[in-house]
Amino acid sequence: MALTLGNMPKWGQPVAALVFAAGLFLVEYKLPPGNFSEKAAQIEELQQQLDAKQQEIRKGEIALAKLEELQRDIAALEVKLDELKQILPTAPEMGDLLKWIKSLADQTNLELQIFKPEALADQEFLREAPVTMEVIGNYHQLGLFFDRISKYARIINVENVGMSPNTDRTVRATIRANFVAKTFIYKDEKPEKPGGGA
Image (cartoon, rainbow, N blue to C red; front, side, top):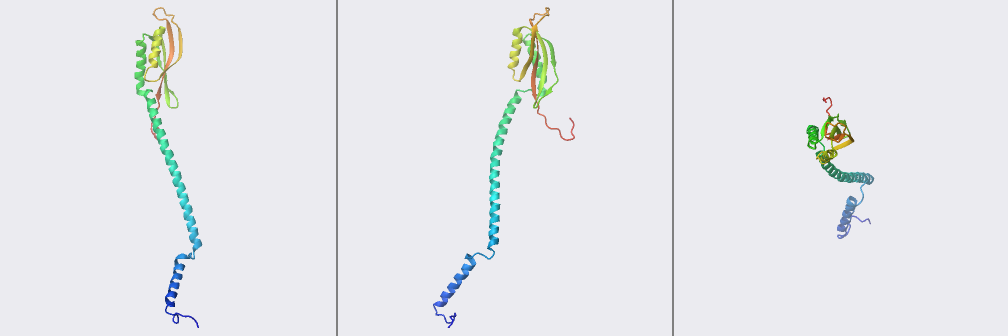
């Protein structure tokens, strides 16, 4: 005789219902869905996207650390540049500097024979501003002149020094010296706008 729900003993019906419910639970929640391979492919694709995003984040963190380091380096270089600008005359200061050099020759009792500012010569970041000079006096006066130039707040180089005995007996000077006093102007030019004038 076949066993049916109707001829089952009383205790068997709840057991059968419980077994049936357990089977439904397993089918619904525990067994893999029918489209398991599709879901697995989606999971793998999402994992790859997650790995790629995490790699981008790591690259970004490294770039940020480098950016902060570069910003510190730039700030330090700007401080050094400002310090250097303090010892380089600007174009408007050149007139005062030339007057100071001329006045210094008078203060040290050198007689100025030639004082000729030459054309500015462009370098990469600077412009050379040479002044050709010729003076007559004695060794002590010339040494004092060079000493005071070397202690000036701005950079002034003395180059191409030539000395010879003074042959003009109408003045009380023992030597004639010619040299180039050269200073430098920092080029702080802004790039011209397209179509703009000079």
